[in-house]
Each structure stands twice: as structure tokens, then as C-alpha cells.
Image: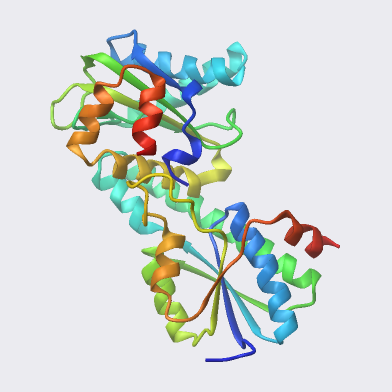
Length: 160
Length: 150
């Protein structure tokens, strides 16, 4: 266990709350002089499931896979840009697979001592309970997890 | 992103009036166009995108469900229309069953992740036969929303 944190990993999924998480992660890395890694996982498992369920045809899966890769590149570039603004070194990592499983492996292999996540979902329905990848990461992470609330104050403070 | 993030009672229609595939798709797009205030051109663009996708292969997925969907930059964010038909509609599903539950999913090209997540969420929600039956029997849009919230 590293306190203060030395190896911080932030999970990005393109949501506004994950953007808040990267801002928080950048500030935290600066405070702790920690190594910062931003990770985006292209959810190829979900794509395969959509083909299996008959919702996507194969050609569509390939097209969406390209779109998701572009999404990943765009969000990781944005994370790098934000880190540069605060003179914080950042490593960006793009992975593919089942999100919570791939993330667990990365957290272990990188010996991360903190995972920073955007907001977990409100439990509004039994059907959706525990279905979110962020929720699963929260429960399966091998290291401590910090959940950043989707808070306007963090954006304002970061941009100040 | 899941169904509850985008489910809006104004984007639910019970019952649908049309009884053929093209009619149902048009009706679902009309619900979206009316709620979002689309122009005639925007309506046409969205409809053509959905029909173009349908031409690649039917979005009738079986168990009485169809999920017509498309990418369209007419929509600002990932959007969902739910429609329930009293009469089964031939949607060329692989199991040969006609469809009564319809989900129209539209997303701008920049929101691929959210689009995929929403489609997966719909697929998950409809795995239960009991849930599908309750949806088919929903009396109005409020009941559809309530069923998803349970």
C-alpha cells in the first residue's frame, strides 16, 4: 500500500463524470508527485454480445469497433492535454476486452495503489443493478478506489 | 449509459398504430421528431438512416423484440423511443416471431460508446420473459416507464 499514493490510475469511458475523474486524478498526482495513468477500454465484449443477440450485423460491429477506437483516442488525447495544462506527466493506455476484467489485470500488473473512477450509477432499477462496468470495477479492484462525484466545483477549480 | 438514463415518457408510444415494419419505424421516428422539434428534412434524414441500417439486416432480434437503430448527427445525444404494439408486426426476426416491443435507438457518430452501452442495456433488460410480457401488456407510457424503474 502506498500512502501517499505513487501509482494512480484513472479510468476513462468518455462520460462527463470520467472527465471529472481525470481532472481530480491530475490534481491528486501533482499533490502526491505520483505517476498518473489514464486508461480507456474499448468494450469489445459488448460488441460481440450485440452481434450474438442479433442487434448488430458483422459489418456494423466492425464499423463501431473503429468508432470506439476513435473515441478512445479522442478521450485519451484530451486527458493528456489536461495533464499538460497542469504540468503533470501522464501515461495513456488503450485496452480492449471486458472492461472490469481488463482493468483488474492492469491495476495488478502496474501495481497501482489507487484507482480513480467517475460517479457510480444511482441504483434506480433492480435490472440495472451491478450492470455498470464502473460499479463492477469498484467492487473488483485489487487496490483502493476513489469515486469522484460529478461535481462542477472540480471543473471550476481545475480551470482556475 | 443504460435505458434509464434516456427513458422519457414523452418518447414512449403505447399503442403503436401501424402494423407493418416500415410503418412502425416511421411512427417511432415521428415520435422522436415531434418531441425534439425536428424539421421535415431532419425527419427524413433520421428515417433514411434507420431504413439504410435495416437494409443491412433486420433488427428484429427475436422474442417479440425489434431494435431499429442508426447513427445520425441530427440527434445531439444518444436517444431512445419505445413503442408497444397491440398487434404483432412482421419484422423478419430470426426466430420467426412477430414483434410487439420496439426500441428505436439513435446516436450521433461521436457517441459510439454510449450507443453500444445503451443497446447492450436494452438487450439485458429484455432477457426476462416475464418482463417482456409485462411490457407487451403495458397500458400506457407511464406504465412502460414504471416497469423499467422497478
